[in-house]
Image (cartoon, rainbow, N blue to C red; front, side):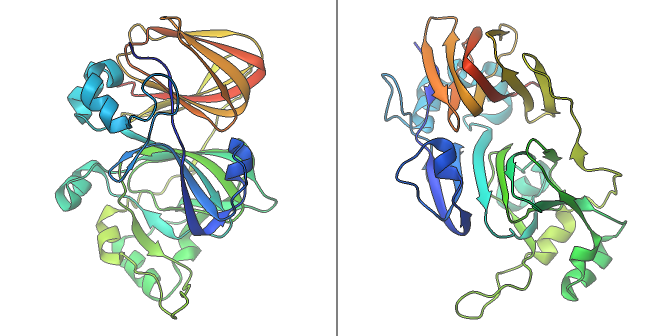
Length: 325
């Protein structure tokens, strides 16, 4: 019988990593330079490993191979096969990350035999003056894009946002974007590791070499449509589900609780992921399995779960995400 799973985080030390991830997750001793914690991953070479219950030590890949649609859901398997379709991360940027773009499914399939990457960001914490980039600030085309990369003026046409705790950005494949220094973010994305680097501020490594740019690959992957606003606007409510994103790849809700809430998944036919963004709570499924979680932990509810009762202690904030079709 399947139950709510927690997983061992996969910590990634990188040159731009900060010092927020370990304290946020309650990991001691605190390690600095951790830029990412992969909370739930089915990326080859980075499979998440179960941290609780009788299946402790098994990988997410093991679970999928053994339990299939009981874990993922029938509709999910029809679309994505035996791949867990989402990658859940925390990202802590001490320095600016490169300007990048991800291809859509069609292009990623053709070039890399991979899924594309649509993603979303939830800003957990932003330092004073922290910002990020999403989309264009003026209309350009592919030729102008190439020219601006070559003459170092691409930043002049990117839309910059000052960010604050709780800000949300939805990033469909093709949208140019970058996380800025001082941003601590939860990211939900398609399972794909394909990134085209557009610009890296002319930074050099210890040997004086710049990082490789993927100008030509990115040119055909970029969506040049100009939108008036690239930020997701939502109204926070306590003890309610507030929708943050709803696309064919995932639906994500924000749930901020100070009282017990029950969720009904009878009609869903998908796994459900809970990312604890603050506080503590117990999650109890319809089979009587209970798991206690605190800030920084991620829980996978198998698709054969018909419902869950969330009991905060005394308050808790979650992002809830699933494949809604």
